[in-house]
Length: 210
Image (cartoon, rainbow, N blue to C red; front, top):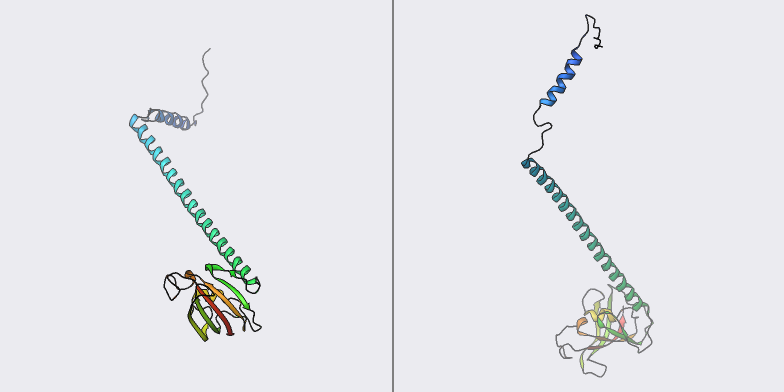
C-alpha cells in the first residue's frame, strides 16, 4: 500500500524543513569536522598540555618554597623570643636572690660578686649618678693592687665603666661593700692592665652615694 501524501494547503510554508536539511548537509560537508587529527596536530596538543602541566608544577613548587621559608623564619623568630625570655628570667632570678655575706654569686658574662657588708641606704638605680670607693687587685683578694679610688663617680648603665662593674653593682645598697670578680670578657679583654694578659680583675667596692 503506497504512502499517503500529506495534504498541503496552498499557503503551506516548507522553509523550516528545507533549512533543517540544508544545515545537516552543510555540517556533513564541512572539512575536518569528523576527520581524525594529524600526527603533527596531536604532537602539538600533547606538547601544549605538557607545557601547561610544567608551569603548574613550577608554580606549585614556588609556592611551597615560599611557605617553607615563611615557616622557617617564624620558627627562628619564636626561638629568638624564647631565648630572650629565658635570659630575662635568669637575670630576674639573679636580681631577686639574696646571697649570704661572703658568698659569691655568678651572673652573666662570667662576673661574680659577693656582699661583704650590706648597706642600709637606697638601692643603686640605672641611669643615675653614683660615687664609689674602690681597690682593684690582680686575680684575687691577695693579688697586688693595680688601681684605687676614694671618690670615683660615674653614671650607671651608660657605658662609662666596664660592663663587669655595671653587672657586679646591680641592686647594691648605699653604704654597702661588695667584692666583684671580673673576667676579661666583661673587663678589658686581652689588654694587660696589670693582672697579665686576659687576667681576672678583683674589685673591692664601697658604694658611697647613689
